[in-house]
Length: 128
View 1 (cartoon, rainbow, N blue to C red):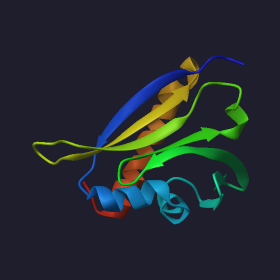
View 2: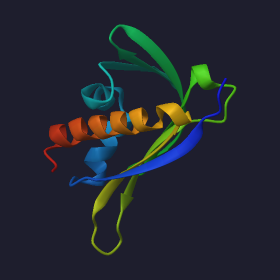
View 3: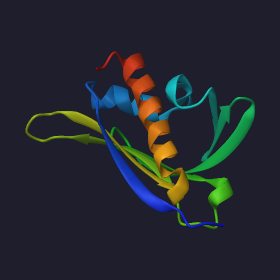
View 4: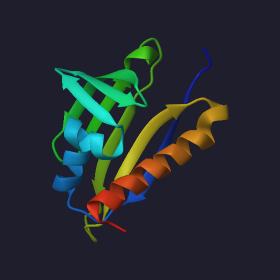
């Protein structure tokens, strides 16, 4: 299996950290923008797209700050995806920070996918 490299992206988003956290950490919130449907049973989240399912283990979360998942199919690799809320101490600007892993040939496609997903999230939240 080809090694995956870590990449990070930052998306400024005009919304309160508390509201944003609900959309990145709950099955109902994630179902509105990240996947067609999301279910959780304990630490295992099931993400459903076009009839196919992928499961991820919740690796950690901190209220109104971050949530981190590991795809079960990538269990042998040291990979994860994390969504972190960053608030500038001076301006109070809010950003959604994405950390994910990708193979080199899929990197641009994965970045575009995150762009599209976060664009949908901003639309739902009424953020520009």
